[in-house]
Image (cartoon, rainbow, N blue to C red; front, side, top):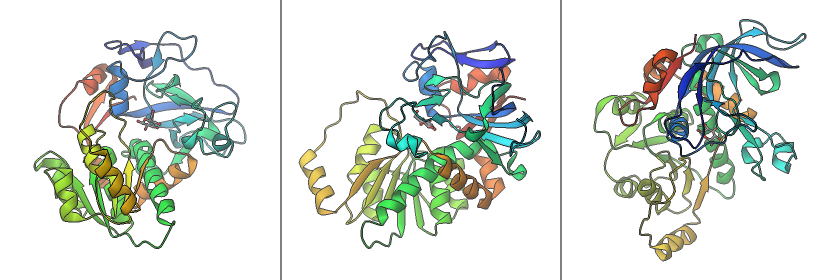
Length: 349
Ligand code: BGC
């Protein structure tokens, strides 16, 4: 079969190659790959800045945003040939830590988790793949064109789930959310914000174009300019930072509004020096009872929440998030820096 493989931490190592077909283990589904979404994490791995090679291997199959169709399922499985499925990204650590033992692998406490296509285990970027059925999620057949957006949706479903829990620390009636960044994560966070009945504001540096159209089609307000200026005008109760750009992340953390909850979702590149008035920042966080927290990955519960959010959304809006579809033959184009795409998807079939 063909696969998109890479050597983590080695730039320019990405290639499409012939690899042996997967061997189906006990309780595993054999899946025909339909599509693979590409995100900032994949680009970081391809640039040589992130990722962990599977032990004993010289290359790793890339890709964690999956969608496929079941070819074979074990006897008595709740899956059947023909079902659409998405594979969960993270596997709990083997110890396991308390969080992983409770199915909350997204909150792993010892860092020994593995992630398909990212950390120590092959991903879903191949024409066929296998997945243990307890790490597969059935997707409604109506989502065939957009089901590949489930994994990024789970990441924001988790962020919202955490915000909701933090909300419950005291009386709070949030009305406004500011999302920084109108990439896939920002737009999906905005979608869920609208589904929750909030007034949604999205900030991005692109002036006009598809990002603005998509934000306005949700009934949300699009802003350009600095996060600091927009936050002053909007006075958000919740901020979801989805750019990972150090300057924007800092301005998100500096949002000054009593009770504000600030969720950081962008995995940024370390080493960028920024002047910070730590005294001012600390004072605002304390006097506002503010919460600044990070959120990564998703557990099964978030996959269910993400699937529900996608099912409720306007399918044509979701389709517009996918601005480019490539084949495996020209898959490397998905990793070129720059460009104005929202979500690039590689067709595996
Ligand atoms: C993935 C997450 C993963 C994170 C860190 C993100 O792109 O969506 O599942 O936990 O990268 O590796």
